[in-house]
Length: 156
Image 1 (cartoon, helix red, strand yellow):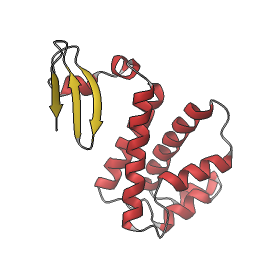
Image 2: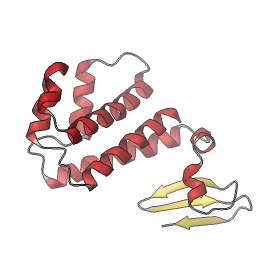
Image 3: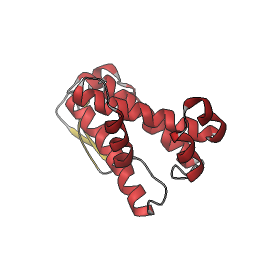
Image 4: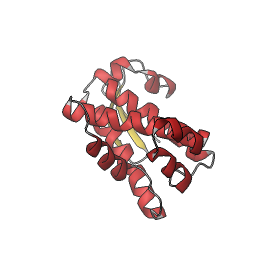
């Protein structure tokens, strides 16, 4: 549940930045990210630094859950290329990677069982669902909840 919450927070930060016009595949921030830390901040934009921090939290949450061990640099690089925009990625590829990030969150929440709902109930409370409702499944933009009475509610 903790890993899922970290992924969710990272996705929210990235979504906010992208929604304000930030292009995560820009070459300046890509180059800045590859520089030693003492030089990276001189090249990377403020938004790029925020995006990179969120990206790092996303990747470490995914990899720590999978391995539980120290993360090799090669693993981090592979996950970066798999989930995040790179210079010259097409719009379709960037959209595909965004969907893959969402699927990673969904998988992490599912793997946590009821722990996520118990530890982080704010999402359900904001939907005005009956107390004790449980998220059953999410398909596309629709979420299916079971109420304590056994009814199934669909929230768009």
